[in-house]
Image (cartoon, rainbow, N blue to C red):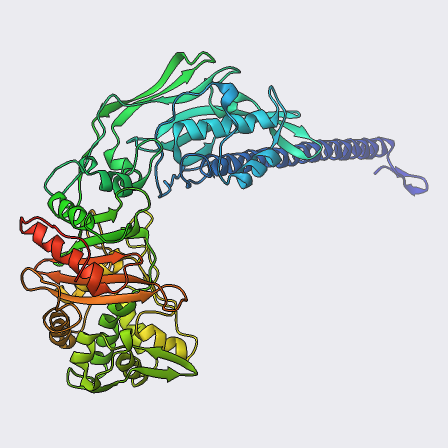
Length: 601
């Protein structure tokens, strides 16, 4: 700073420099603020863009999940599947009965699918907006694809979305599992989305379901040129040769029923193609072809020789309606299911009857499991009263004090009621469960097993001890009971494969049980019916409604060698009169004889 007369003074040049610096600093500040504002704007724009992209992805994911729900519920196919967005797709195939490939329908005949697909339809509707077609038309297209292709599982994997303003696209990969075909149908498609007042929605377009679809076109399957497999007997004979089995067990292929439905996936000829058809049913494009092979024939446990013997024996029944089941005691496999008259309702496997005195096999099991023996004395009076309800023996029989073995052979009701009263609570129910009395259908088709509702009071418990009350069984179930005594193991009856469950009968009770059943034939209620060979059995006379006297169904269950059986004759009176003679004729026919005669005694 220069020296002046008054001392040091500021330099003009320095003042100018300082001013320039201030100007520069201000300019820099302004520039920084401007840049910061621009960067903030860019960052804000990017955040908003990311948020919009996220909303698009969420909308696409919701749509694909809804489509998966609709594609795998209701209709003619079965349920299952998952939807994924981004990453690895997963597919689940649902279990259940497969349906036949439908014949081609014109698009006008398509109603959008059948069955309980309301949830899927509602979800697709919520995720969609009208596009080149309305949302109802989109739903019809989706359901039509589901029903014609027989979709059993599905996954949809979304790719990277592309958005511009209020529109966006979302590519996806679909994997549809089709019933009876070895590999999924896989294809790539694109969803077109639009921003609406209610968020992003997918535009309804046929091409969004499959890129080959346009108005007037639809997807379909062509059938395999291979041959359907046969359901065979154990010896390899077609079961369709037996009229009774064909109608009541084998079922049909159109529409599928019976074992044809249960084993359709195995029996059906494999392969075919997925095609695009026009309104005239003409194939305009083949999307995928699968190798065509014959279906696989399936051997069952049925024995036509045993079946014919059962049918011949039932033909001699004194009453118009009857049924019979035979089971292999070694495996639990069903050998014969016969109905009289043949066809119609299958009483053999679907009939519901009170078992009557045949249930004494279970009651005796309960007694022997709880320390009783063949010699346990029981009082067989003409009648007994429990909680004000009186129970009587058939034809007012009374034998005084007799051992358990004789009470079983003579089928004394009053003795068995007193026997049940002496057992711990729940003993009958526990024994019934050993023999499969839990209400489970035995076969994979409509069938009836055994049910033992817990008795509500002492009177009902007394009634249950003699096979009445609310107990219900089919001939199939009672044949399995006889087979269990013969083999020592109760096995759930089956006609193909293996039994799905089994219970061992306590070994200690088996010798006496078998002796009891032999005594029925040699000195008891069935002693008056000539039986070929060493037969073990139990008669039953089951009241099924009130009356004076009450009407009854007739039963005889038992076994000889490796064959167990159960016979029921509706309104047949006493088991020894009408059911036991049919069992005798059945065994005679198995031995090569002629099952002649009608009725009993």
